[in-house]
Length: 330
Image (spheres, rainbow, N blue to C red):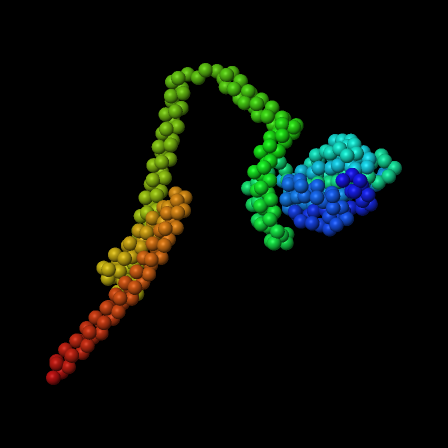
């Protein structure tokens, strides 16, 4: 790889968003090696490439598209110094270093000749396979990867079964930030226990009084919520009665007892669905939606039937009234 990629004289992209980016034809051995690194080969956020660090010039590394990535660099023909903020690291030829390229990293060399450097952009070890495949599926179309989506997600899942647990474990053991985090959490737990131990003992009567106050406050809150719920029920009932009166004045056939019964059934189903949604019982809510739709059709048919019967009765009454008037005239 060093012999082949070390001949590069300009930036050359090998893989980009998990597919060939044009450099594989010129650097087949390097390309095959990168494709064998699952975390780099399936990374859809960036690319794996060869950079050329020139003497007396700063070579800026690409900035990450997402913090779900890490970078790996390997200078090929000479040493390179990496700089990020106040931090620097010397990386010898054919050695590797992991970099957080979200922070802005530059590379320089003391060599008199340009130094080609492999720069891999790979999945962060803490990003699990499910997260990776979800990202790929969500963004595949926008990135023009719809045709490759299935192959890339399959490669992610295959690699995860083979090595993800082991890789994440090694990362956590070697990562200084993880050690700092463990120490911080351990110290926080110790400090909390120490603070609890240093608290002056509380009087049992005072503690009991506080507990009683909490209980009363909770009880009052519960009662207030029940009263509010009851007021809401009563408000809805009043609105329903007003609507029914208005509907019956406009459409008298809605006063039919059969229509009332079917509409009451419909309203009951709707209330059950509201309760299911409030309780996050989505399967039950979905089932009740089907029942509501079915009952709405029943109500519609019942109203049509009642309207027809009402108009027929009105017509018969009108005809009977006309006949009575003729008899009186005679």
